[in-house]
Length: 323
Ligand SMILES: *Cc1c(COP(=O)(O)O)cnc(C)c1O
Image 1 (cartoon, protein in one colour):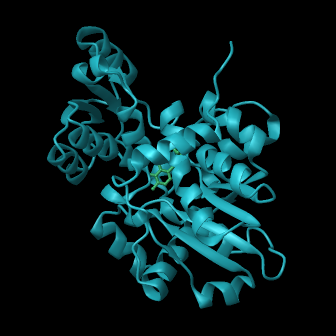
Image 2: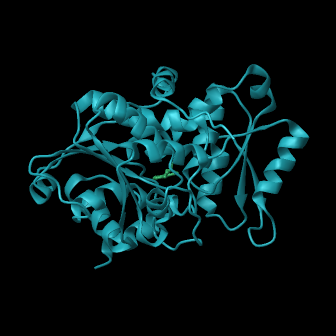
Image 3: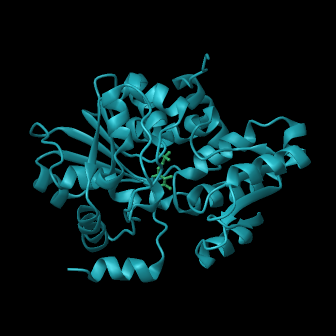
């Protein structure tokens, strides 16, 4: 089987497509963080992206690349998280009907937000029904195109535009720390880093409880794990994609893990010191930097992608007040 892997040229094309549509999010710094790590940290704030996460980049780029005929037939995806809202918002902006397959027990707020962006929500019972079957059935009956959350060339290329902007804005980096779920963000970021900052070490960071990426990179093949438990709900994938792994094994130096307690402490740091809301999954890269998952040489220039800020207020309050 030959796979066509995305390249940096695809990222460049995605950034032209996203120009004036996605926010060029700010890069923040913190003297406190620099002092604690004895490095220079550059936080790329995708928590301030449209719909609250980098996923808008990949979702929009994927729909924008469909043919006129495909656009008329609409798009379907399954997700209970940020990819659902990304596809819904991108579909609305591009005039494409979107259908999102979500579990019946997904948070009411998430279903409502997805509908507000104009998507049709199809609910399924995750204990008795298979979402792949439902998606395939819809595709078959309606001609809709399935856009998966990470293992897709235009999704990966779109996600890579955040790291491209970061390096363009602050210059070359020694390290780049990226949150890792299915690997779309990490693969895209790695494509940008190897093109724009070839000496940069790109590192993925995933929850300790769900280290399928780490196992896969070390073993040289995609490893599937049992469904992990972590507060990083955007990184509970149990295996990497074929495309994402293909890029990751070429360009990613290593994959690190952090604990839920380290994520909570990092969330508090962002709230208290930097005055920004970052969701648990969005803290993965920063938690690795702030909690010593790796020791930087003094003064190292470290890029950190804060991938999203969508966290239910009640749970957020709970995290912030947990001691
Ligand atoms: C989806 C998501 C991730 C993981 O991205 P992948 O491309 O699946 O690796 C990380 N952070 C947030 C906030 C997400 O929504």
